[in-house]
Structure formats: structure tokens, C-alpha cells
Length: 588
Image 1 (cartoon, rainbow, N blue to C red):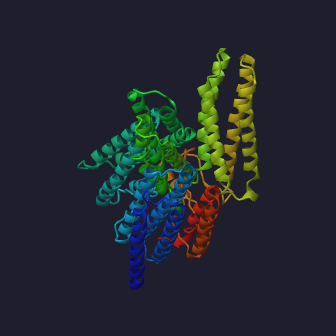
Image 2: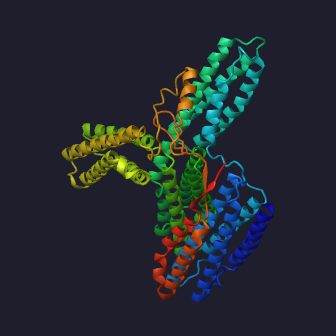
């Protein structure tokens, strides 16, 4: 078996060398139509063989899950940038220009992924990418600290406490990291909650360090530690869901501001304003990346984690490309706007893909509740404005619509995961919500701009909030009876937040309900992420290679006949390449 793996690894190394050679030739002189198509066909063949060789290695039962996931992330990177190459070539042929900067970006990212595959084969990879770690740390810390029995085992009790402190430190570090990008109010809440956890840990440490610790005081501090850690968990998850709502309700906005300023506004000499726009965009990207990392830390399902990690790599790779490209346009250094637009479209596609994957991790009931609470605050404010005779603030109304649109997009993704025969109630509630949302938008546009018209709009806004609550309740009720619904098993947080440590331990034990091999972790109250078992990791499939070749060849053949038809094949190729890794590898 070891000999077989060595042969497979040698084949991978050789294939990586061939792909690198092809990528280095991706320069401006590869511009003749037939020559470019030949180059692309060769690259597709080489990547296909690489995937198949890597599959042989990953199929080995002794292969680490972390290794398989690392390989899959970088296979997906190859697929993603192969697709971007197609977009570049199609646009180049339309405008008869060479986009060297975008080509070099594709080459750089693909070479980076090949290097990472090479390192993984040599045993250099992250064995723990924090997949599901936030929840594991909290679970382990709670279980460990509640295992302390000073009365019956004094020596072991202190050792267990010292071990649990390491886990508490990990949780606190992760909480403060995510707090740095949360909304200001949530930052203060998380910071205060972390401080209270640290204080109670210090009290517990002081009691343990006494010559004769008081057992009753130890138990009191242990109970308080449990309660405060659960409270921190609640605040972190609430903050992340609120941040997710904000970021993805306006995820295109910072980029639109950047585009408007650099491409359309004929304003020069305003470098300070440009710097502020760039700073806002950087903060926006940081928040998106932290949401992605936190999602990985809350999920054990390898497929979702691989997709999120791949999208994050793309967004991180864009940090050195997108802003400089816009800056060159603004400063009149570059006049080729097409490259900037290609970068922009790629960034947007990866951000959208990231959101769609994160939707598969967030619990529907949790997100509905967060959006319900946020929208209820907006509608109450709008109602107060109308009550005192003021106009409806357009910014607040737009925020209401955007947040509701996020919910609409989210539920559409969720419903794809739901067994159709068992969820008529959810579908009906969702349809009602969509109808009311459309009615609210229409009323705002059509009704007269006076107090009477505003009152009628507010009535519809209140109905919208009620419709969101009804939808939320459907998911809450369905958690206990639908095996196919994400987030099955959610409970109210009051049980998890009780000060009685025995009850808390019982809740921790009961908070996982196995569903066809999947597990859902229960986060306090309305905030939760779905956490499924890492039993299966997706792998490339040898069976798919023939189908890939057919799709690739169809693209090439049709692009020769009609260049515009090539553009229509992009999605097909991307989907088929994803299918190459769409079967299971046994995990650990």
C-alpha cells in the first residue's frame, strides 16, 4: 500500500510540474485564438489528471481528514481560477485586448494552490483548521470544569481546573477576535462578558491557591463560570448573526462606492476621500472574512468548510489586486477599465458564494429571530416618525427592505435542503412573507407622500414583521419533527443559561440529536449554527472525468464556432468541475 501511495505521489509531483509549466506560459503572447484554445485544452487535461491522482491518495483509509480537506480546498481553487480564465479569454476576444493583470492573478493563485498541494503531500499542512473548534472549546471547557470534584479528589480537581483554563483562554481569544469586527454595541457586550469570565476564573484560581480551599465557594465559582461562559457564547453568536445580516444586506455597497468614485466621478485631487472609501472597504472585507472563519469554527461538515475556505482564499488573494486596480484608474495610470470590472465581478461572485455556503451553517430559526428583532426595531422607529408627523426616513426604510431581502435569499437556499413533502407549512409562510414584502415595496413607491400614505405603509411594514415571526415559528416547530431541516433540535437558551451546573451538563448532553449521522449543536436562545459530523469528506470522482472532458470539449468546439456561445458554457464547466469532487471519502 505504501508503495502504491508513493507511486501516486510521484505522479502528482510530475503533474504539478506540467501544470506549472503551462501556467508560466500564460503570458501576453498566448493570444491567437486557436493557440489559446489549445493551451486551455492542455491545461484542462493536466488538471483533470491531477485530480484523479489526488483521488487515489485520498481514497486510502489511513489518510488524515485534514489532509483530504486541504487537498480539496486547493482543488477547488484550481477549478475557480480555471473558470476565471475562461471569463478573461471570452472578454479579451470581445474587446480585442489582453488582460495581463487578471491573467497574472489567475496564474499566481493557481501556482500558490499547487505549492500548497505539494506541501500537503510532504506532510506540511494545518492538521487543525479550527473546524468546529469554537463549539468544541466551549463544550470541553464546560464539561471539564463541571467534572471538578474537590471534595472527593482534591489533587485531581486542581489539575482539571488548570487544564480547563487553557480552553477558557482559547474561547476568550476567539471571542475577542470576532468582537473586533462586530457592531459597536455588540463589541462592548462581548468585551464585558469576556471580562466577567476572566474575573470569575481569577476568583476560582485564588480559592484553589488557598491553603484550605472552601468546597462550597469552589462549587459556587464553578457554577458562575458555567453561567458566564454560556452567556459569552450567547453574546458572541448573537453578534455574529447580526453582523452577518448587516454585511450581507449591503455586501455590494462598499465596492459600489469605490467603483462610483474611481470610474464615474470625474473628481481628482481628493486622495483623502479615496482613502476613506478604501478604509471602509477594508473593514467590510475584514468582517466578511471573520464571518467566514467563525462559520468554519462552528461547523464540522467538511463540504461546507472546504467551500468557505476556498472562497476566503479568493477574497484574501484579491486584497493585493482590487484596490490597486481601482487606484490606477483613479490616478489615470491605467485606462483599461475591463480588468477592474473583471476583478470586481470575481470578488462579488466569491462573496455571494461565501454567503450561500454560510446559509447552510446558520440555523433558520435563529436567523429568522435575529432579523425579526432587528426589523421590529426599525418598524417601531418608522411608526414613531409617522406618529409625530415626520416623513418616513428613506435610509431606515431601505434598511428594512434590504434585511428582509437577505431573509428571502436565505430561506430560498434553506428550502433546497428541506424535504418538500414535509414542509408545506414553511413554504406557505414563506410565500406569505414574499407577498407582503412585495406589497410593502409597492406601497412605498405608489402611495401618496403624505401622512395618510405613510400610515398605510407602516401598516404593511407591521404585517411584514408579523410574517417574519410566523415564518420563524414554523422553523421552530419543525425543528422537533423534520429530519431534513437544518438546525433540528434547537431549544430555548434559558436551560443552557441556568446557574445549576447539573442542569447545564444535562442540556449539553441533550443538545445533540443524531439525524442520519448528522449532529446539530444548540446555541443559546435564537442564535445557532448547524454543526454536522465530519464523518464524510467530499472527494474527486474518477467516474466524472469523462463527463468533464465532454463539457470541456463542448466549450472549445462551440467557442471556435461562435465566441459568444463560449460565454454560455462557463457555468456548465464550473458545475461539472465541482462534480469531480462530489463523492464521499471516509473521515475519522
